[in-house]
Amino acid sequence: MAEDTYSHKRVTTNHRRCRTKFTEEQLKILIDTFNQKPYPGYATKQKLALEINTEESRIQIWFQNRRARHGFQKRPEAETLESSQSQGQGQPGVQFQSREARRCRTTYSASQLHTLIKAFMKNPYPGIDSREELAKEIGVPESRVQIWFQNRRSRLLLQRKREAVASLEQEEQGKIPEGLQGTEDTQNGTNFTSDSHLSGARMW
DNA sequence: AAGCTAACCTATTCACTGT
DNA sequence: ACAGTGAATAGGTTAGCTT
Image (tube, rainbow, N blue to C red; front, side, top):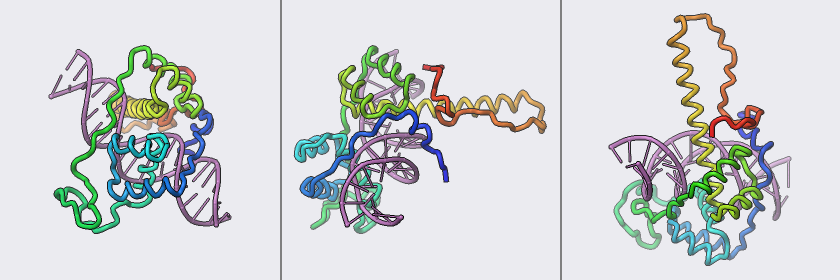
């Protein structure tokens, strides 16, 4: 199903980053922390990163995967949402309400943005090498570059969807009702690259 | 080959910043 | 206030290792 949800990636992506192999000890610490708080804030992640000597971004990914796979909070499902601060006995309940602070928002300068956008037009799915290079060039962590590309792609996709809907509505309005208008493909692009990888840099 | 899981994706939402 | 956008999240896919 959905055979090629990711088809484009294949073509444009360089390579993924090498798979991280956590040691038993690292895992123990990670799991321990996870059991205490499945949604750690930036400070906690930083601290963890330092403690087990890995990048904060790897920790973020690890928590994401862990939450997805281990439905965390498998305990009493009583406190799904806002239970008060009840710091349960024995097993600390998961703290859902007071979110810890997130990472500070990065503000990109015009020239940094220029560099990112240029790179995006060339390849919206940069591999680890390209991202690292870009990161170095503009002086931000690689993880920020990755997030920037994710957000950029999402918003571009969203914009295209809206445009598609808008033009469809317009068409309907200007067309004869119940027209026999063939519904031939419209070749809209729900995804970048319907095999022409953003070749021409249109918007942006 | 199958299972596990890091890496990565889209879609959506939260939340900060500048207007 | 609102738009723009970085950060976080859920949920899904891809692919490297281990068994």
